[in-house]
Image 1 (tube, rainbow, N blue to C red):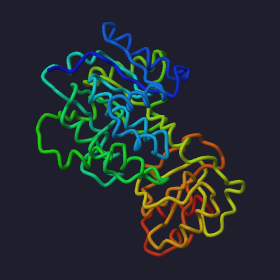
Image 2 (image 1 turned 60 degrees about the horizontal axis):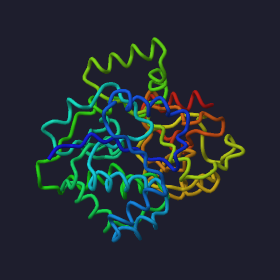
Image 3 (image 1 turned 90 degrees about the vertical axis):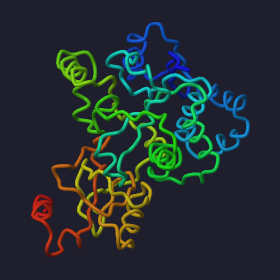
Image 4 (image 1 turned 120 degrees about the vertical axis):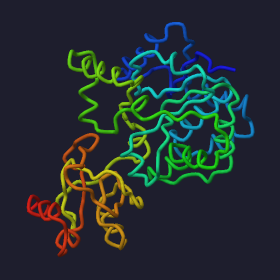
Length: 335
């Protein structure tokens, strides 16, 4: 059996956001002879009801749409086979040379993502390929049927239906019929929005940069839009960002990874939750509590870059003696 030449993508309706039209068309352009399937929310639920009726209640009871979007990709690949790709994935060159000799393929995310999740490697569920009925996809579905539903933190989504769940299933998967590709092949960059923005579009610069990726052996590029995070978290309540007692605010900046909990996006409430947690030294305006703040050169720009978004670090931690020089620079620059 071979991986069928079918490309699967999902969206709420047939009205795909204009910002991802180029990405969608890149798959069609590089695979003109492939079948293309866009699964809407209604079609996804009908598919589950028809082919996986025992899973339908679990599917319907997921608290977040992203969990259903995650689940349907495993079910479709298990039932029909083919290639699944998120809408924010651009195809750089045809995948046909990658498929022969493999019954299932999943790319690894960049090492920085694995390190932030404290795992040896992190499987990327945003682009996967499989033949119908593959045992690994069957193992994933069994895991989903037995899993506890997530709450509200990003980590819960990743661990119940996303990449961390895939890692858990893979860790106990005894067979050798799943191919894991190095991150440079299907997932060459981490979620550095500023660098990724240089690759978007058809300008000479973007074309040159994408040609460089092709030369290094990359077949696709993920833009990590993570739109599901905004859908999940809800609106930000932070009208006076510089007046949160006990914290120094770093506007539009974030220290990636090292999350240990979730407090919500009502920032005064999350600030108190952070102060009450002896392990938490910081939090961001997505509500993620952090036990470690990485050196400032590794900080990232927040998704929307608005003035009330950013990183809060506890003053008592910043002012403590014995901190590394980069912490002292933070205090000086914030004063």
